[in-house]
Length: 111
Image 1 (cartoon, rainbow, N blue to C red):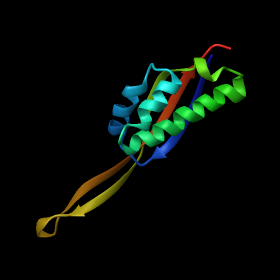
Image 2: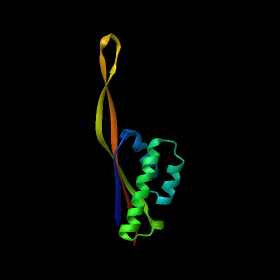
Image 3: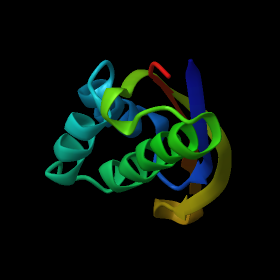
Image 4: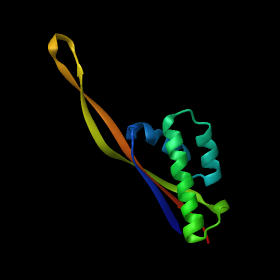
């Protein structure tokens, strides 16, 4: 049975979050949390929160065993983009985009 959890609008670009997502995709939840614990990026902290939330949803809402849960899929989509401007030489401005992302974690286990 598949169970999902998601977090929206984290202030990290999706390209950077996908690098962390590829580390834990297909692993058991306990192994994924250990990998994320020692990954030195800010995206790993958000990813660990979502994996823990998906595991808690599976355990509490669907009565699945937490030992047999596997992270089957992680989707990282682009959230809203804040358009900013940076001053440049000779009175010009250049665009500067602050990107955000949405993370969806899907775990699967057997009842």
